[in-house]
Image: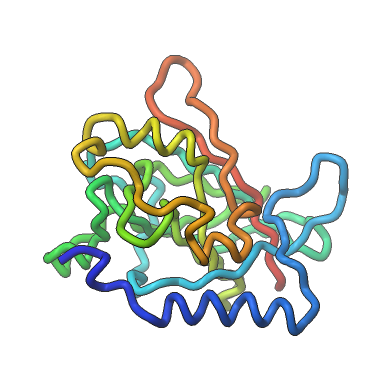
Length: 223
């Protein structure tokens, strides 16, 4: 069964509610990236967790479990939005679709856990995940889900997005090309429209001739 079959109305409703809440509260969507010309940090946009989150506590940097695909090294940092100070020992969790568009635990095997995991931030607020460039499924632009918890309290639920140009190149490679190009652009994805432009990873090719990409983002959270 594909993620399309599991896509729930609550994901769309939650996205709409998040946007409405920001409007009512007079809070403009905020960037997770600190401006190069500003010393202030702002809140990362809140987004729906979607229907594929599961309660697991796999603490690991490498979440691939042997999954084939284009390597993606995620380097995230967690800071307090009010002060820009790094948060040590924050729990950062990610999960996303495989190159074939499937999510572990929803791919016909309830015990699978690939492309899911947690990391604790270091003294500089940084975490690293070794994963694969995410696949896509009908109705959504490619994305990575994440949660951040501090002191046992969940302080952020969001989604990370990738350059459409890079995604098109990746989806022409082995392990992705049989599925073809994503059928939903950033502009067509209503969840991306609720702050996605400011939740987009800064992607660069890995150095030293290594395959794949590195993706970086700073996450500003309220604690």
